[in-house]
Amino acid sequence: MYPTQVLIQAPDGGLDRNSIALGEQVRVLAKTRLLELRGELSEATLSQLNQALLIALDLIIPLEEAPYSSY
Image (tube, one colour):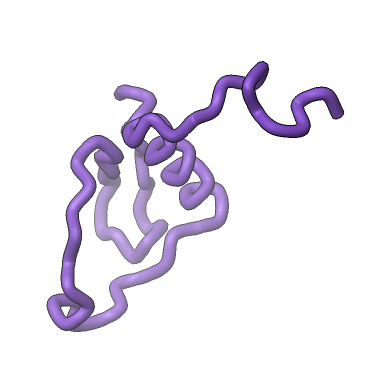
């Protein structure tokens, strides 16, 4: 797996089997296309997914350039 990918293990997120979220393949969907709530991801998985998206979208600020890095 790559840093932009996150393993989601069933039953997390309401999945029936393990899956991989591909942060490098972001899609936009209208809310009207989402017919029913399938499940919710755990906080740990959401945190991993957020990190993968930051990497995929090149939004990570290097530590030496980060504001308040001297604290």
